[in-house]
Amino acid sequence: MLNWEEDGTCVFLDALGCSVHRDRPLVCRLYPLGRHIYGSGQESFSEVEPDPGCKGKYGEDGTIADYLASQGAQPFMEAADRYLDLFLKLYLVLKEDAEEPAQHDAIVDVFQRFSRGFREGDRILTDMDTVVAAYCEAAALPLPDNMEEKMSLHILAVEAWAKTTKRS
Image (cartoon, rainbow, N blue to C red; front, side):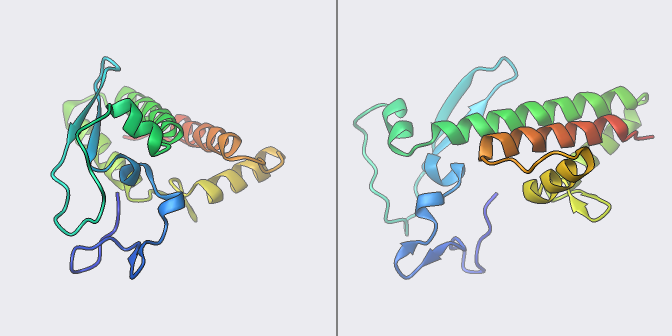
């Protein structure tokens, strides 16, 4: 989710354009496409109407695959898929603990809190750097050298949190 200024512009937009273009998130790499993943694992894309103030260049020639490649989207989509898998695992762990239908509302609450930066003590579980540092310290592991290793440890740490956290 991106943050917006009061006037509706992206917080990363400055006088020269996108200030984070080189390191832009997946949502920006996909724009004006929306990516949809179904329970079956099937993937589809939709096109949204570009914002009238957007200075991007859009065309109708080429394929979605070509567009995604030109945006360097693949590693970002793979990371998003890994976190989607984690999200589903968290759901199943919490669902196991929900014996009554009324408890399913508690599951939704946990996911909403998690997506906003759910806290465990002084750690925000969606803050990869903080969670990985704490996990490495607790497990006497060195901090990872690359993003792939860091992401793997982050996912492991959140999965471990979910298995030890019981809801009632």
